Length: 418
Image (cartoon, rainbow, N blue to C red; front, side):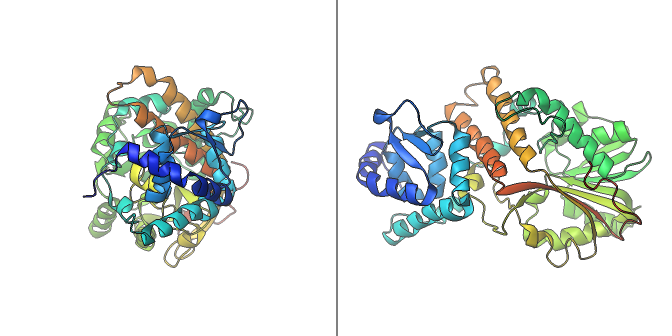
C-alpha cells in the first residue's frame, strides 16, 4: 500500500499549487478561495476560507473526494454556510458537469504525472461502514417518532422557511408522508400489503394501525428487525430478514396468495439499474391484477450512474440514483405496468435533511464523543447539507410512482391534490 504523505509535506506542496488550483476552482466550480489569514468580515456564498494549503495538494492528488475529506479535516470552512457553498457549486453547472468536471480535469492531469490511481477511491469500503454501523442512538435523536429515514412531506408546513423551525415540523411532515402513502395506495381494511425494504418498521406499523391492513416487510438489516419488533410490533405485521429477490422468487415458486398492494420506500437506490427489469417483472407476479404498487425513490435529473466518490465512500457504497430513462427502460415502468401517477416533491427533502441536521447537532452533547468525534460530525454535516443542496438545486429529486398491472378503471383520484 502507498504510504501516507506527511501533512507538512502536503502543505508545502499545496502552497506551490495554490495559484493554479485557485484559478481552476473559480473557473470551473465558481468557488473563490480566501486565505484564513486574510479573512474578511463579510464573505459571500461562493467563497470558502482555506485554513491549510494542503487542500490544494489533496485536490490534485485525490480529485473530487478530497474536497469533502478536506472539509472533514478542517482544511476549509464555508464563507457563509456549508449549504450555500455546495448549492453554489451545483448551480454553477451541477456537480455532475462543470463542478465535477474540474475534479475530473485534475484527476486526468495528476494521473498523467503518475500521482494517483483514480480507481482506488472506488475500491475502498472500510470507511463506508461508518454509515451502516452507526447505532440507533443517533438515529433516535435525528429522526421522528416513526423512525422515518426517508423524505418527509411538508405540505401544510410551507410557512417554515429555510432558517425557520424545521425540527418542530418534522414529526408532522413525516406523519403526512406515511398518510400520503396509505391514501395513494387506496388501502382498505383487510388488504394484504408487501413492503420491500422495511427500515425500522415505522411505515408498516402506521399502515396496520391507521388503515387496518396486514403488512409483510422484507429487509436485510438485523438491527432493523430487532428495533421493529421492540418498538413497532403489531399483530397484523410480520418482518422478515431476507433479500427481496429471494422473497419474490420463493413467493412465486410456492404460489402463495397474491398481495393487494406493494410498497417500496427508499430501497430502489440500492437495487441497481441492471436489476430494474427483473425487479419490476417479479413484483408484477406477486400482486393482484387490480392491485397498486407505490415506489418512493430518489431520482436524478440525468442518467448518470456514477455516484459522487465522496458519497460512495462515506455514505452509500454501491448506491445509484437513476434518471428517468432508467426507470422507463424495457421491462420497467411502462412495460407490463401502467403509470397512474408520478409525483415529485424533492424540495421537501431539502427541508427534511435540514431538520435531521438540526436534530443531530442539538443532541451532540448526549451522544458518546469517542464514537462521534469532530471528524464524524463534519462528515455528517457534509452528507446532510450536500444532500439538501442537491435537492434545492433540483439536481436530484424525490419521486413517488404509483403503478398498476392493468390500469385503474377511472382516473387516479390523488392526481394533483394529495
